[in-house]
Amino acid sequence: MRYTLGAIGVGAALALSCVAGTSGTARAESAQPHSLYAPSSMVLTIGKGEDAATAAVQRAVLLRCRPTAGGDHPDAQAACTELTLAGGNFEALLASDPNRICPKIWDPVVVTADGVWQGQRVAYSHTYANSCIKAGGTGAVFGF
Image (cartoon, rainbow, N blue to C red):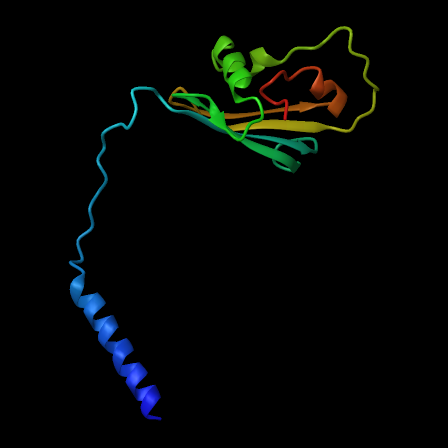
């Protein structure tokens, strides 16, 4: 019984010292930018389904392009280069390989990009008829 009371007394003393030691003031972080570059960081996903709202996400990666290429995208440098050449326009990345032969099976695959490109909000999705067609039309950006 004595051990329990001692533990409670020590715990109460620690709690009281923690409360008394805090000043209660909150400090706001500086509004100064941390970089000279506008941010470019997006989460890219590939999912099975007809649209982004109902697709089951199979893979997702982080792509960061500014100030340097990074994230967990397997080829971040190539993906950032493609996006830069396209001016951040994901529709401009859509291409179809005329020599690629794909089955005409409806098994939809959705790709999405959500985040920021050079300081501007990005929310993009596109549905491909199947994974073969997606593989022939996404380049490095959705090549993961």
